[in-house]
Image (tube, rainbow, N blue to C red; front, side, top):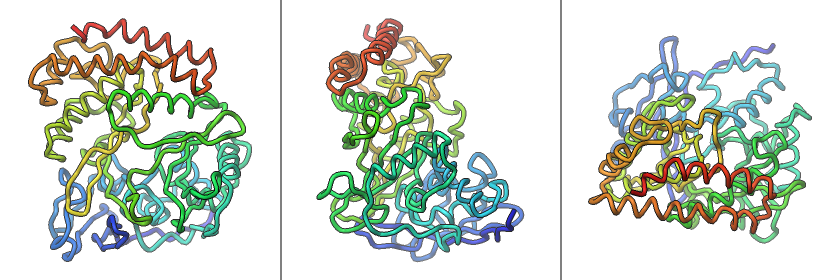
Length: 425
């Protein structure tokens, strides 16, 4: 195995919505911990990146050792999990370096400017290979990603390595779509391109090649319920279709413009790998951060959609917030919303302490936390969600989802309705 010179210091920059880049501060590591210090100019002109856990001051702040591998949560948000880590570790191994030798600071240096959100890190790792700044075929990138995910190859193309800086277990890529030539993409912001996240499919996923189609159906139902989802489209694939989601951390009016993105996981220093928070925590954090009572009602509605829709992989990385240039926060669009039951039917995020089948009293208490003036207002929201989910069979049929999958998910949705219909009382 090769020896890697471990990264000890990184400059953190933030991309603004107009594409300008500003220095945020410095990360440094010694034998005891990772430390962060804001730059004085940033303190004078901009806003806190993480108002709950990272002091907005000139002091040198040590990061907690857990749960983010020794990083402050806001910077851990820049690191991928699942698929992105698999890609990164394969690249390290191609250079003869065992993943056990890699620190979280090394991983930030590898991400550089190719992660989600507005933050970037320099100097960039020498292990990062420059991908060509020309367009390639989405089909080529997707097929290689699926081969890697399925274990049919161990080679990581430079283009895929550069595009793989997003979270989640499924194979995916952050790409720029050519609006003039559908199916053509780049991994760098070039004129005439738009930033998207494309999720590929594999026979080894829980819903096989229909993963993208089912998520598209769920996004349609969530949109019908008024839950503000990202724009999406389906792309032809060798088996079925791949789902593309427009990146909401990017400014559509400026190709290189970004909004600062922060997950609930990073904001509260929560461990997304295990159930650690309640929807009451999500609603309270959203209200405090966004300073808008309507935000609590939106998050309540999303929580109840997850309950009735069997979206049980509702962990803290699947909830994010966006901050604009003047320091105003808002909830990110409802993302990673799909059919994802677990064997015990328990949600990753609890409903007033209940992992499933919360009683009416618990949801009424959650509605009070969410700033509903009267229960009948919250009940109307739940009714709207139930009505949106009742369109599953129709929407799934229009998208070409197989009869077997339509019936399987339909039966689960009906069972959940029967279990939770008391909430409509």
